[in-house]
Image (cartoon, rainbow, N blue to C red; front, top):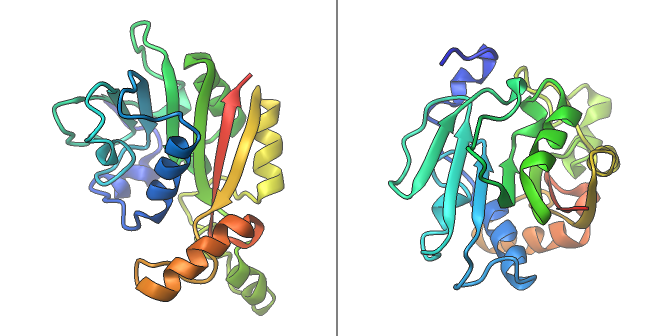
Length: 223
């Protein structure tokens, strides 16, 4: 399949480097009982990469897993993979609708972000959960460094077509037919990926002060 947005080819062999946001998403869904050991759910991961959300659900044997990405990806046998450019909409899932859709670090890469959210809305079950993660424009170090001519950390990139803060993303999600359940962030300043013990502390602060965090984690329910 021809890829329309060629800037995303660089993510062909991408592996999720930081499990912090994935684990926060999984923990919240478990705590709120959207996920349990006897779950029989249809789950779609948009922007699939090795080490992503679906790869962290191996213990849930009854869940049906679907993955979507603009690039071809090798997946485990229990994952139904679709290669598709979401700028063209969503592929034909042959009548399958989803209980959870996870789009991690994807929305900033999409030309028409509002239409993207509406397309997801159409394949979500009533009361289904959308989980978005995206870089935060107002990450604390970015606030400090911007007056010195430094571009926003994580948020700015040549292959990003949108930059979000919590207010902007929240308004867009609500406009697209969702009710926001919770907003968290990955971490303030540093994560446990490189700084194990202090990183855990700053990851906890990311839950308390999401407006200053590195990446927004937004949970929203289909109305």
